[in-house]
Image 1 (cartoon, rainbow, N blue to C red):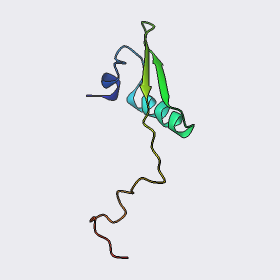
Image 2 (image 1 turned 60 degrees about the vertical axis):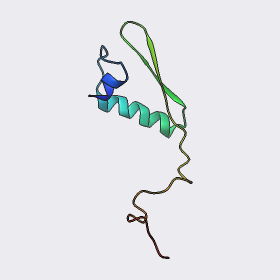
Image 3 (image 1 turned 90 degrees about the vertical axis):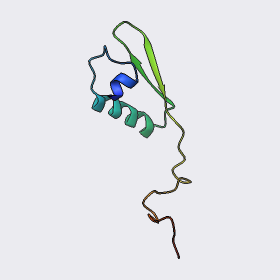
Length: 69
């Protein structure tokens, strides 16, 4: 299943790559949501999670889960 299908944007002439670029741009600009307008005029709002990267664990840091410093 494509991202386009999951978001209900089947009738739009947009690729999954373009959707991801729009979401990445919104995250880069610290926005809370991305809006898409379907061909029938319906507004689809994708809310973006707030991620505090400073306090998130890096999944590759201590890959085994055990680290002795």
